[in-house]
Image (tube, rainbow over all chains, first blue to last red; front, side):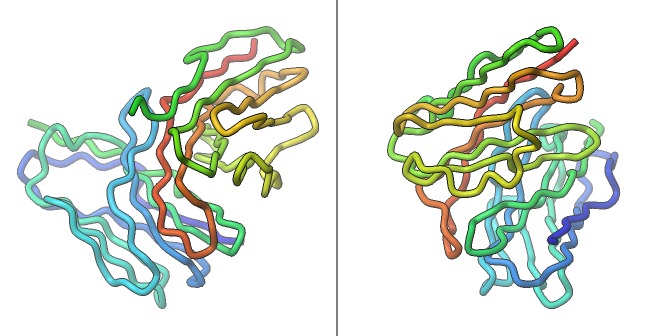
Amino acid sequence: KQEVTQIPAALSVPEGENLVLNCSFTDSAIYNLQWFRQDPGKGLTSLLLIQSSQREQTSGRLNASLDKSSGRSTLYIAASQPGDSATYLCAVWVGANSKLTFGKGITLSVRP
Amino acid sequence: DAGVIQSPRHEVTEMGQEVTLRCKPISGHNSLFWYRQTMMRGLELLIYFNNNVPIDDSGMPEDRFSAKMPNASFSTLKIQPSEPRDSAVYFCASSFRASGTSTDTQYFGPGTRLTVL
């Protein structure tokens, strides 16, 4: 059974800092990996999707990397801003039956 | 596009009552997903549909839960009878496709916060 782990559960950083959020998964036979953002009381918004054949994806100040062999992904946020404060969830797409398995997320707080 | 629409946004009910959650997916999307989110267990897939047909309901916790998709623009998740441990946020999501090689992004609704007293 695929398990997705995100540690730590919460992170607080000062504005302007570059930071890395980690995600690990137990079964490397994934089709893709996605990073989502969730604001309090809201649904999830997809940030980046990395296909299994890719190593990384970039969108603005965000860069996500994927190392399938080691079962790891990182989300890099450059020059963090208070508006980046949210919960970031990692999810992997597993199996032919198309199921996203989510980590529990990392709650990020960027202090002004 | 209005995105995925869920109703109600909040539901408070008493144990034993029937609860019906509703979802309208994004027009043109062929796949619809129901998730449940709790602090303890995180986000879990309950069931998903392709072209209105249930494909995987292995995440449905027990027979008290049922889901239907009578047409491409509407789905319901029903809990009967409801129990306090069903209290959670229930999300609906849709995507253009859902297949083993799909790269389609899922778009989530705002969720329904259910409280069972």
